[in-house]
Image 1 (tube, helix red, strand yellow):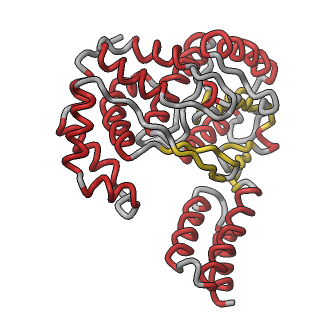
Image 2 (cartoon, rainbow, N blue to C red):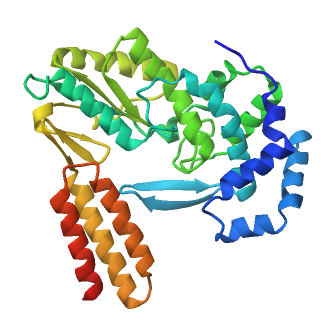
Length: 348
């Protein structure tokens, strides 16, 4: 395992901070806080560099809000200054850790994503079931309150195995420790949903689980997206036998646990609900709740457009986004229906 040095100086280099600003601001130019930072861009960036160089930098507090996507999530938003640093940290650290990740970990990685994860699971199902002609089972698990439960000391120890740079570890300790969850978790636990660094930290942390499942348990057909994972086999007893060693590893080594109500095992022919799609032997459909949410949200945006509180551009963006989701399923008629409803709602 290669150990990397001189990471801190690469992160805080002025040219790297300015490059990180360019990456950060893409698509955010209309936001007030971004415009305020850009108004004194050089002054603000040089000040950030001086604080980092002198090790007087301290991560600012977060602003918190809730979103529904579709379930409610508590998002913590860092200041522009801190988010630029997050980009700087991510762009240096991600290439260090990326080669160690397994190919079937799909969350927040270039060339991966939800649709690739669904495609991969579907290929495994087709292979094990011999195109739907033989029995096939899927064990699905979810890690209970993952982002709130990440242990800071364990995370820093994992990061430290690949880095021999005290200054870099000082900075990472400040970033990791900057989050104080409001969900009654200890101060030494939790990373904020929304941080770019949290996406990297999640992959680094759960890579330990991936390696255990792939190399210790020697599981072949395994797919993970963030804290959701699925294992495919034609032997249900084999799958049941995996639950306890996985749970024990999570508890002992990562201070995590499986969600007790989100451990399921289903036959392929019953339909496998994964990342918004339901996989069946000869087709892929969109989850019913996802379909309902699409129609409801598009209808509400069309009403807002007619009332003058929304724009037609916003409705069209939503339509094209939903059609993109539907394009990855057997949903030609559903796509037509959504487009017809769109025109009907706008013309009411």
